Length: 306
Length: 205
Image (cartoon, rainbow over all chains, first blue to last red; front, side, top):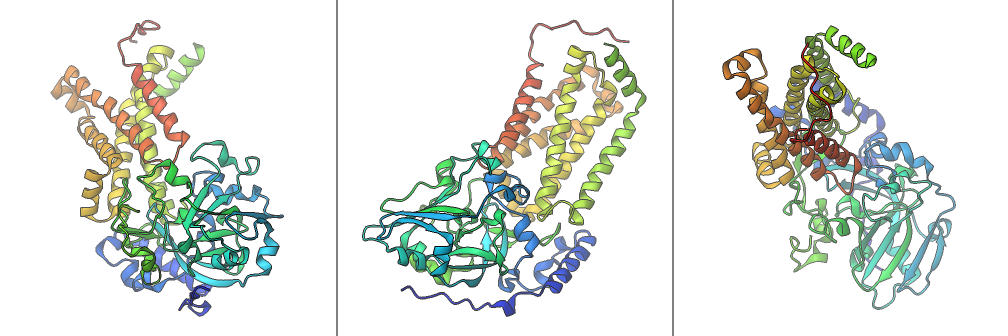
C-alpha cells in the first residue's frame, strides 16, 4: 500500500464563513481605492502570501465558476446547465488490465472506501486558481480493490457524454467524450483522489458529480469530471485536450511555471475571489506539491514532457 | 422603403453626442459591475472580454454603415464617427484592463506582445487604430484633406481583420462565436472589394 498522504491542514484551518465574508469586504474596500493593488498594497501583502495561507475559496466561487464544456464554454454555463445531468443511478465501467473488471455502482465503490477531507490548490491552465476543500478517497484504494494487472502502465478515464442532458456536446469544442489519463504511478500516488464532495456536501453537478478525479499538481483539466469509465491500459491513452492541441496541452500537464503555454505565460496565477484588483502571484512548481511528487519525474525533461 | 425613410428620420433626430454619453455610461457601468461583483467571480477576465467584444462589435457596426447605405438606403452616416470613436475607447479600455489588471507586470506585458501571436495580432490591430482615433475630428479632416483622410481611415479594414483573428486564435477548443464574428467581418470587408454595385448609390440629399 502506498504511503498515505496526510495533509497538515485540517478543518481547523478552514476559514469560518463569517471570516470569508469579512475577506470579501476587505477586497471590496480595497477595490474602492483605485489602483491600490497596483501600488503594491494588494491582497498578497495585506494577508500574507496567499500561496501559504491556502484559504479555501467560497462555496459560491467553487460552484459558480467552472470549466465543464459539456455544459457550455462560459464559466457560468455549467452552474446554469448542469442540473440537467442525471447522476442517480451512477456506475463506473472498470475495464482493461484488471483482475475484476465490471460495472461498479457508485454505492458499491463508496462502500469500500474511506472518505477524507483534502484541501487542495486547483490551478487552471488558463492562469486562474482556487483552493478547494474536497471530500474523497484515494484512487489507489479503488485500483487496489479491482486489482491492477501486470503490464498496466496507464489509467484512462472517460466523462459521461449524454447529449440530451449536456447541451455543450452539440458543439465539437473537442472530440467528445472528454477523456483523460494518468501514468499508473501518478494514479496510485496518495495525493490523487476521487472526489465526491466539497465542504462536506455532495459534489454539485457543475463540479463533476457524482464522482471525479482530483490531481492537484496538474492543470485542472487533468482532473476529469463525472467519470463513467476507468481503463487500465498498457499504452499512453488518448486524452481530450492533448488531441486537440498537443503542443499546448501535454499528456503530463504538470503545473510548471517554467513551461509557458504557447499562448500565455504560466509563471503567475490569479486566485479567484480577489476582485477586480486581485494581485497575481508566482505559480509554484507542481502547484506547490513538489515535495510530494517530484520523485515521480526524476530524470525527465519536464519541458519536453510537459 | 417607407420603413427605411422612417428609420433614417429617426436616426437624424438622435444627435451623435447622445451616443458618446450612452457609450461612456455603459463602459462605466460595466466597470462598476466588475468592482461590485456583478460580472461573476473573475471580474478582471470578464471586464477584459466585455470591453474587447463591445469594441469589436462597434467596429463592425461602423463597417456596416456604408454597405447599409448602399444596399438598403439606411443612413447611419451621422453616427459613424461616434461609433468609431467609441469602438476605439472600448478597445483602449480592453487593452488597459488586460495590461494593468490582468497581466500586471511591464515585462510580462512585453513578453506577451512579442511571444504570443494572438496578443501580437491584437496589439497590431490596436496600433493601427490609434491614428484613426486621433484624427476622428473635423479639424483633422480639414487639415489632411478629405481624400488623404479617407485613405488613412481605410486602416480600419486590416484592423478589423486582425481583431477577428485575435478572437478566433485565443478561443480554447473549437468555438462557434468567434467564427461567426470572423464571417461577419469577412462579409463586411468583401463589400469593399470592387464588384459591380447591386444598386446605384443613392443621391445625396
